[in-house]
Image (spheres, one colour):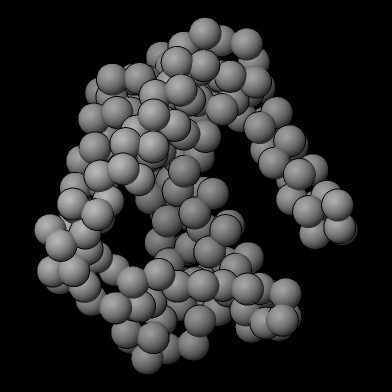
Length: 182
């Protein structure tokens, strides 16, 4: 195992531990989030997206040989259908893939079932892909789009601006929750 793999493993273990300590190993947190009664999950996801986006942009800007960023084509129907299936699965299981793995690692039976269901769904998609490709992939293939290239702006400043917007949403959600508790 090389240094990058060890760093990835260590980062994943630490992130999983932090998610467990924050209560993400229980499906109730996700269910309350989907019912708009608790914004903890949304705030963590927005923060993770912001940090990851800025980190990826910084790597691509200052260490492109390390970044290895590969942009995939945007398949509109595939994204919409996949998002629908993903959302329904998340609502049924009460977990997203990351929290299901945290639940599994914590020994929660629901986590095991959610991970097994996710793997079963992925396998079913692999089997159905030849039939789905002409319907979901080929039509409305918009190619490899990125926000900064579409806007013709530099990558890192664009990532910083979007991260600031996401941070603003997190601050607003904190105020909204504080107001609801008062």
